[in-house]
Amino acid sequence: MKKNILRIIFLILIIFNSLIIFGFSSQNGEKSGNLSKMVITKIADILNIKEENRTYFLSLGEKVIRKLAHFSIYTLLGIWSFAFIYTFKMKMQYQVAITTIWGFLYASTDEFHQMFSAGRTASINDVIIDTLGVIFGLLIVLLILKIKEIIRINNTKNKEIYSTKI
Image 1 (spheres, rainbow, N blue to C red):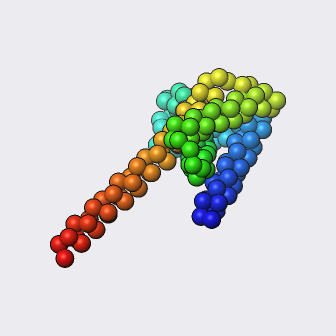
Image 2 (cartoon, rainbow, N blue to C red):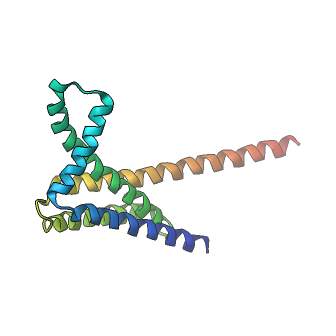
Image 3 (tube, rainbow, N blue to C red):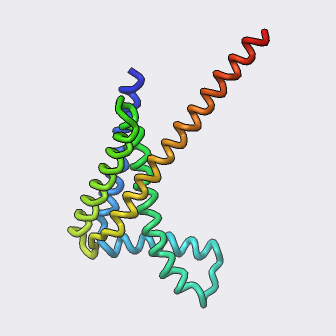
């Protein structure tokens, strides 16, 4: 019962995350570029970048912001996807492989979808960044699971120590 609830929650998060990605990919090149420019301009304002360095900072920063946006939204997709797949009983290497392949396929279809948005193109580099984001997300979940296991083991050892002293 608990696993079914978790599956539903993670599936909803996957769908929601995928819809956000689809929405961003549906934006035309100008709207997408303006969003990145707005973010990097705010960062330049906060950092108080001097006028003589501002053009270079904005130009370079816009590219960095775009790539970080790809990586981060796909990191979330990796977290939700791996957490969903983890609720099924199968070997860990299959769970990792399924999550990675799913992330790669979704990133590939997303880049294909962008070709139909005015002023946008498909990029193999973005597919790679997106897939790395998915892998990073699943590694975050693996780290959380490992920490949870260590805590559980330590709690069990502590209970054994205290029960033998009494």
